[in-house]
Length: 499
Image (tube, rainbow, N blue to C red; front, side):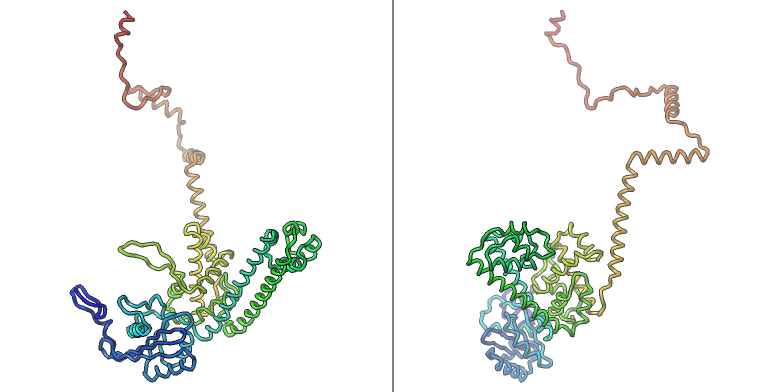
């Protein structure tokens, strides 16, 4: 069997299947290899020949030139476009082409668009390969949310980055305090809380604090006394460290102010989705901020996903199948959108802390068997399935189902406990004696004269003596098991001594 990769796939009979090699007549596809400064474009017109008709051009990534690219595709009557999701370079091209009516634009993951072995790796060859994949529809398009949600997504992701920056800055302050021997985190739950920020500001100004200074800045909610806090931060901070602490405190205040500003902008942009936010807030573990994050990532229509399982798989919360030759290998979740996946896991942890809900009961019931990591991933998947169903139907979370689930859960635990207690009663000897006494009382009521146990044993022994059967002696020692030992024969020395 001989056949090159250009000719097609070689079958068992030795023939080649050229469906991948021949183009589809009447289909026009476009492949784009996008870079920072240029775009290599290949338009393939299928006419049944191996390659069809190829039209290749190179465009600049300047916005003015992108409109020329759009007009050229319209003149070529191209309705299928496929590009690779390389960073953020594809976004301006996608935003311009999506305005064209009837334009089917696909953005593929780089792991699905790898060039086949044996082909040269150039920009033009990549564009040709993308146009071929686009013609046959062999690439699963990535989910791209609508334009209004993409604008909201920019704010939500920036808000998340600001929160992470603030957390990193708090760690820097903690490191600076530990270097100078101040153990403020051991007496305060948060060094950036109300009491912590006041103490840090005064410490940056003075370099050392007394009990009176701490008492003046202490909040009423603080559990530790001023003496305990003074013992934890006893010492003198250097002038250089005080200046650095002032800069870090100013950075935290800036992050807090920016976070509040971005959050207000997010609330104003999401006013048109107030009904969807209200639906999501009714789910245990989801608050207003989490609801805005979820809407920015997946939208509100969800028409791109056929079922909730497709949405969970896209979010990376469903284990992928790994089965070969009737052997099931360990299943792991695949890499996916890191924003929605981490968000759903955080909401799942919050849902497990609620009382008398289906999610919390399911987690604490299955966590010992599955492990907390697998169990929390399963809870996150359940949450996403709830979101899909509720946004599709436009209904609020039904709390009566939680009540029914909790009652059913308690009933199952009660039945299991009753079974255990019943088995223990049947196996205990005291319960057996009580049961025999009950039977005796019932028999006496029915007129049945029962003989005592001693009389029954005496009558049995008399019958055995009359029949010539010896009764076993109860006081006799039990016989030893095993082969009986042979009697020892007297030796010659013993015989001489006895004589």
